[in-house]
Length: 324
Image 1 (cartoon, rainbow, N blue to C red):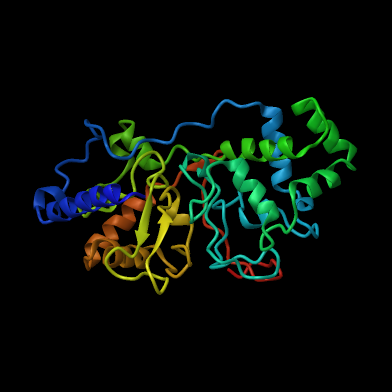
Image 2 (cartoon, one colour; image 1 turned 90 degrees about the horizontal axis):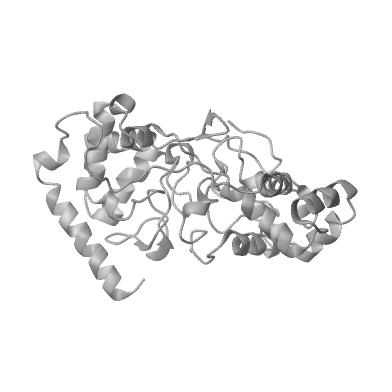
């Protein structure tokens, strides 16, 4: 992020913090649905895509042959049945602890960059890197393709979807096509944005007003409530890592289901994360009431996938068994 953009972001943050002192800014007057444009916009439905490619991508996402030792799949660390990630501080797909906490794959296609470092611009690029990464799949697109070509059924599925046998381009495209379908619309907050006045409570609306007036919305806005810019992690005070680092701002969609929090998984609960962010990013010690209200608002950002509300995952041990 350029110096000029940083200065603008910090100016907006400072103005938001100054506005926080106004009682009118902190307290909603009514529970009515928004009449003006809000800084957060609803998640659209899944894009219109080739369904044969979506189904192929779904199959590949759960295929252990994508890993070098045929021991785990994409879904091992990105559980679509729950929160699109795991509940572990660090996942260990190849037996060694990952450097960073696993981000959810839900709504990943709505981010402007991928991963905590924001070092990939497309789902295809991110998928290829995951295959090559020795800590994730320790494989390659070519290695996976050679395995798949020995399976007549999946070769047929590739031919139906792409008109050819498996190759690296089709492999990465199928997985990315499936990942673009992993959006979670229909949250209570999105319903409120759409005009359903009673979709959220007075406490939740008050929490949203605090979220805006305190300055949280400076980095967490747009369709993904984040995911669209870089920011220093620890603007005012260190948070997690010994030194502040520049990271892609995470999406807050489904955040109530994706504990633990931050790139290092150092915050085990959402209230602890909100409190820590107030100190580190806003230079403010939030009151218990402010924390409770913001957490209440964040709970309204939980959407649905496959007709079910997104839910938290269970912590798993190295042997794959659920701990809680």
